[in-house]
Length: 118
Image: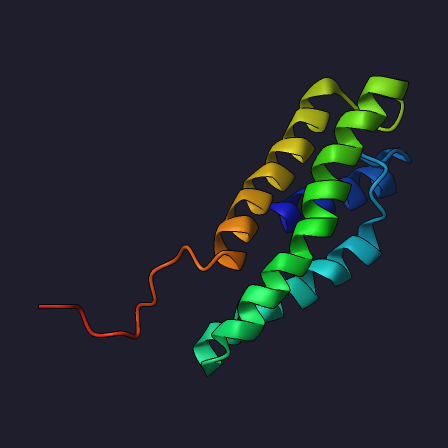
């Protein structure tokens, strides 16, 4: 969802001269590429590193993507967003990711590689 939003914002900036939000498109996409790589850590048995990476991800997504978007809107309105709907989508995407990052950091997930208890 985040990458689709960022590509749409980049497309909007290219075609209309106005991005959907103030998020810098290229650096944000680069951050998501690194984040996506971290999602593969459990496949290599690196559950501890995965949980650390998800804990770290709470900062840019939870603080930067949720809290700062809310504070920015409260202080400046829609100055940095193309519409209220776009602002709501941005906050929603980051909130969704933050909730799952918190769950992952706390180890609240089922490891599918473990045999089921009988």
